[in-house]
Image (cartoon, rainbow, N blue to C red):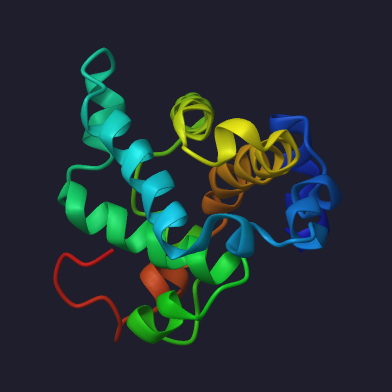
Length: 176
C-alpha cells in the first residue's frame, strides 16, 4: 500500500487530512517556543497520569504495560520536543529513525484505542498550564494527535518484521 493510500485511510478514520495534521508546523511561535521543555514535559506527564489511572478500560491500560509511567513520559516527552521544533532529544536517545508506526506495531492498537488515546490527550491539553489558554495551539495539536493516532492504526497493518521498533539493533531493554 502506498503512503498516499495510507494517508487517505487515516483521513477516513480520523476525519483529519494529512495537511491539517501538519498545521502545527506553521505556527509562529512554534509549539516548542510556546511550551518550552518544561511545558512539553508537563503535557506528557498530564497525559500519562491519565493513562495510568484509566481503570475503566483495562484493555487500554494493558497496551502500556511494557513500560513504567516514568519511561513512557520520558519517551513521549523526547519525541514531542523534537517533533514540535526543539532539540533532537528523541533521535539522540533512540537513533536515526523515529519510525513511530514501527515502534507501536507490536501493540494491539485499533481504532477504539486510538480514540481513547486522543481523548486522554485532549484532556491533558485542557488541563495544561499553557495550552489550556492557547486555543490556536490546542486546535492544531488536536488535529495532529487525532490523525497520527489513526495513522498508526492503519499503517501498522502493513508493517514488515524488519520495520518494527526501529529495527533489530535499537531499543535494548524496556526503553520504548
